[in-house]
Structures are given as structure tokens and as C-alpha cells.
Length: 109
Image (tube, rainbow, N blue to C red; front, side, top):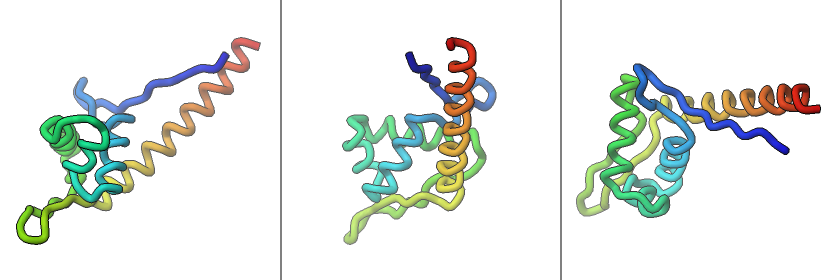
């Protein structure tokens, strides 16, 4: 047996960040655009953009730098804040998982 933990961060009972937004931001960084990330994650552009905007509003910080379309095309890159948020979330999640495994082993030995 092995424990599983689902983790997300809320503010005022609304999701700010979790594994889904982590995957979305990571894919935006990889693809260089919200549209490319949405396609790769099998979600609509509108859903992806909505999640980003909701998180930005709840955090009071920008997660993306958007380059509008045009002759060279548009794109999106992560802000330094978004990169730090990803790093902090991953670190926090690893600590939670390690603590959960330890507690599980002590409890179910």
C-alpha cells in the first residue's frame, strides 16, 4: 500500500494553484504559447486562459508575459513570479509527500 495526496492552494475558498495549473504553466513554458499548451493538454484555449486569469486575480500577480500576435505570431512566457511559484509549489509538495509517507509507515506498520 502507498498513500496518495492531492494538493492545491486556495484563497477565499477558490483555487489559486495546484497540479493542474502547474501542468498548464509548465506546458506554456515548453510550448511558448497558451494555445499550444491548451492543445497539448487537450483543453480549450478559453479554459486555459480562464485558469491563468483566475490565478492571477487571486494572487494579485501576473503569471505570464503575453506577446500579441502579428507578423511574427504571438506567444507567452512565464514571469519570474510564476517560475518561483512553480519552484515553491514543487518543493512544498515534495515535503508533504515525504511527511505523508513517513506518517503512513508509522501508522500502518
